[in-house]
Amino acid sequence: MGDTAMISVNNLRVSFGSGANAVQAVDGVSFSVGQGETYGLVGESGCGKSTILRALCGLNPNWSGDVVIGGETMLPLRTRSFYRRVQMVFQDPYGSLHPRHTVNTTLSEPLAIHGMGDADARIARVLVEVGLGPAFRYRYPHQLSGGQRQRLAIARALILEPQVLLLDEPTSALDVSVQAEILNLLVDLRARLGLTCILVSHDLAVVAHMCDRLAVMNAGRVMEELPVAALEDDSASHPYTRQLLAASLGYDRRLATGAVEDIDG
Image (tube, rainbow, N blue to C red; front, side, top):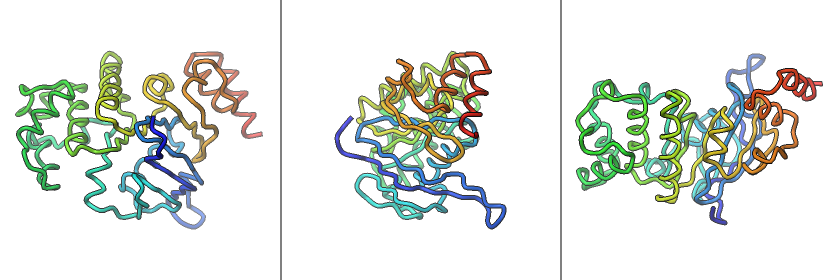
């Protein structure tokens, strides 16, 4: 990890609805991610972690706070050049791919939009980088397995040579047998390409495999920020973090129930 912060988030707030029906999905979240670091956002479904990614990547412009990426202060609406530098990989590789577009079309479109030449060489190179190769170039999504579709989604994100990769549960829709392959691919790509990553996951094992540090979220807030080593040596301090650890290790559910009561009470 470099000393320079590639991503800095301060007092980020995102709400849905208005008036009495307003829901504060992200409630004053702050963190920074160093250049070349992978930072994890962990928590149960609905805790706000994916909402943070959608605000960072420009999919949700309705947020407040301060977001700086690569030294540039972000406004709600992003420039085209932003998407050269920041790309996102979604949870469902089938839903994020156009069913009637071949692999070649899927990878050609971003290059055309951003005016990047040498498309043939770029497509050939990125297919090799993600472990697909030239044989897949003219296939359609329905002709690919789940793991191959996610490799294609990663290739589509990488073809613009971004600095930042936002990963929203990138393995949770895949068979267990394929999850490790995709995680290892992402770890390798981060190291080789010098990427800065934010990984959203509910799975602590996935975070421990990929991340340097993590923030544990609950109900739109960060409960605790800690190094991944704290997961391994069981030195997390917040009761909610300890509950997540206990659940992930299959401990007695009474411990988890007690932890929730500690927070609410």
